[in-house]
Image 1 (cartoon, rainbow over the protein chains, first blue to last red):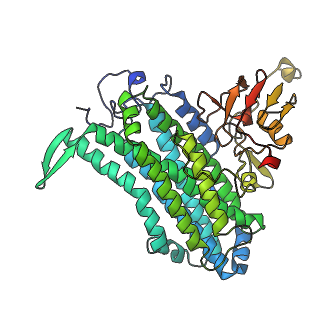
Image 2 (cartoon, rainbow over the protein chains, first blue to last red):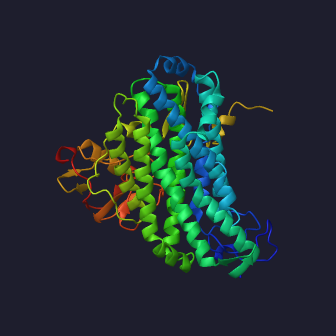
Image 3 (cartoon, each protein chain N blue to C red):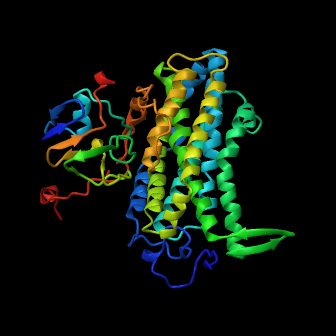
Length: 379
Length: 87
């Protein structure tokens, strides 16, 4: 039986021998020794990316938005609603779902750092919406009322909710068959691990496919020199998301290899078919979303067909990154190659006078002192 | 350093990353961060070996490389990077 969750477990343990998840809950937050130094590196990178939405001026976007035809207003706002939904979920769920299960400090801190950066994204959507419409509530309220958005919200949050609920049962009652409110509930660690694995896979799909569909829409406007403030913010978000995706791919691959936790490799095998279905389902759902976006008309450079091809192309790419066979045989070419120029992130320009390079915040002070520097120094 | 791809081969310039060389010679490669943390450019290395100036953050399997931040250590063969003209 697993050790119950504690915010500071007093059992002396060797953190280097704990698995990523389901070992002894983390006690000392120490980073002098690391089982997986990659998570520490991801934290450092994420911190060097730090940005604030207010740094980006979106006042021109207000004028641009007012001049958009109605069907493009629909595309832009629907896209923004979807992005708001995705980050509402990501700003809290990794913390709530994964932190109680994690057992090494560098991964614990990565999860917190990751989730925190999503809250910056959420705040940036408010920044944009506040600037382009008179009544932000009209946009925000629709997120829980719009059937097309709700449908996807369910698919994303279900994996988290399921894991959280089952994790609670496991933590409270442990392995075995239990009578709860007159119902028999079977709880097993293997099942819990499956739920974690599938949830991580679903997060991967969210970061690897769903976000990119929304990025494509944002950048399609900017390609026409419209809504450029918005695109600047989305570039910063895309830079963060690329890093989060790398984190999730690392977690999934470590799980699959089984060196960290041999049973996790079995779990990954057992979940293989379901993982493929998860990708397929999300891709189909994103295509249906594209249909909704362009229901009243396409925009220059992007329409239902192109966006659908992009969904298939990117689904294939992301599947092979986590060891799954691609499912769309024809989609080996990027139908919107211009997106890469927007996604290049090492030189994300925030304001003309300040170019933010990813290494911007580290090493910006010149600490080199030579003897000559003190040459004209007198006491 | 010579690079052999499915359709052609070329000499990589002194200052170039593998990605830059592939782009210069008209190959189609995916990219995003161009600095090793996103993994968008990952491709399979068939023959040879590469070196990274700093270890990339992105996940790379044993038979994969990230052209955006590596250079060949010897002659290499990469299979899954087509020429744009052959697409």
